Length: 321
Image (tube, rainbow, N blue to C red):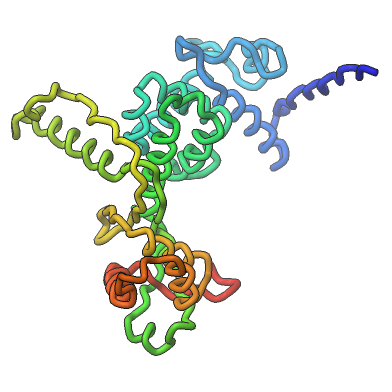
């Protein structure tokens, strides 16, 4: 027997702010309505959507909580704030994800970021966190980046790792003496700002090619250097071919760096980040490694490099951030 279709529940009519705000609850009520007006995508003409989320005209809703003046209507006054919000956040994502918009093109990037911000609007006091959910959004919505979704996902995670590495929290690095004193049972943590990842494409090389291109264009505009030979100004570097890599994103003296990792080194770092001891991390990472290689010497070399770069720190005690 066929089931009757279930009607979707009617969306409750949004509450608007009272004529006067006399409590924190009423202030929050007004803020939610204002946020809904600002966070909805603009029209093609950069105006407010004509219809509110519950079917009423946006004009009638806006006129309930915004007054016109002798120069602007209520809609026009709100549009000023909506445009300021959208132009700023779109520009921020464009700056934070140059690799992604180079891969899919500016038009597709604008569609992607507009849809992203409509679903994941700003929730932080700082624009630094605005794009934190974009890599996962690309993964969950591949139509915006097809047919280059796999490359766009890798690049998005790589570029978000740069944001974290630039100003992420740093803990006091562990010293070589502390490692020697504690022995293999020591639980070592990785710096919170350190990004380690496996990628299906050499996104680090593509990022460096973009940076080289942009530097050449800036030099050309100031007549400091000549244009790149054999390339038209502004040409995108060739998209990378599929190649599995492991890479770390870190900072030194307030500058960003990328460092390729051998798969076994990546496995050790991943195990340390998961909370394993030094010995357990090494055993797990090298269980199926090539026995012809002197892994003891190589691991010693890796740890010396990681310790000198300040990547390693003591695991914080429970209950402390």
